[in-house]
Length: 113
Image 1: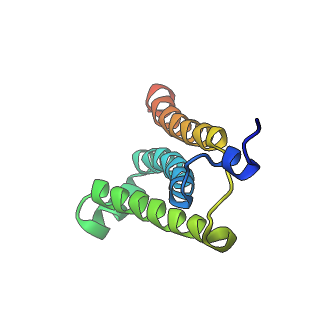
Image 2: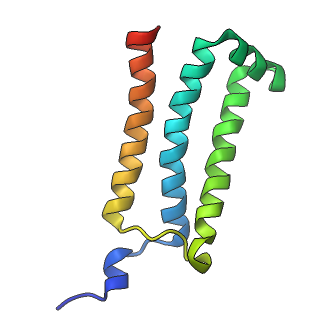
């Protein structure tokens, strides 16, 4: 017996789950790039420190803001039904984003530092 296509595409995944999952993947990659930018450029790090008193506070606010804004925007797509991803696509996106973000940071400290 086949399950309905809509159920098969998103078994139990709410629009928020799909939207904020993709936002997590994006924020992870941007987090890695931001680490590289501020560790490579004293001017970037000084500018970030000047904004909030510490570069890590600014860094955190940028990543959290990106996560919430992106997740909110993606959740409003398709008439509030969010983006259309299957469980497997969402899982692959999240794992890929987190892995890439981590590899960017590790690669920078192993090679670029």
